[in-house]
Length: 138
Image 1 (cartoon, rainbow, N blue to C red):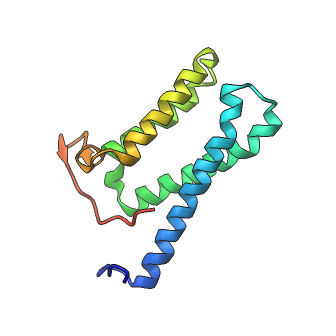
Image 2 (cartoon, rainbow, N blue to C red):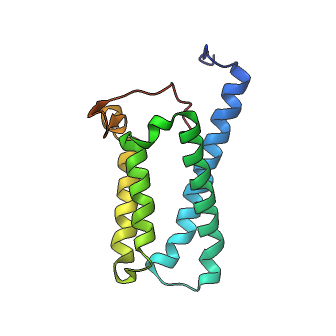
């Protein structure tokens, strides 16, 4: 039996959960497809559609989090995500370092997604763990 979430109807919960999971899956798929451009310098036309998929779903996921709780921006999960965006942007002016930068982004992604809640919810502003509203996992 599905776990009840008192603050939203069960149907809405499942729609949100499946929506967020689908966005995450598409985001990861886009990153996988675009990685050829970073690692093997394949023709841009081959990886650009994947890159667009990765960036658009990433922006939607970030907006989802900020709308749900602006606190996300000062929690480590938000700060690390914004750090990843900066590191990816640095791949262009520092193209000789794009492979290590891309690898660092991947490692940060694992920590952000699978690290302990105490780390992910740590607020760099408040200097302690701050839990926002209950989130719907994707």
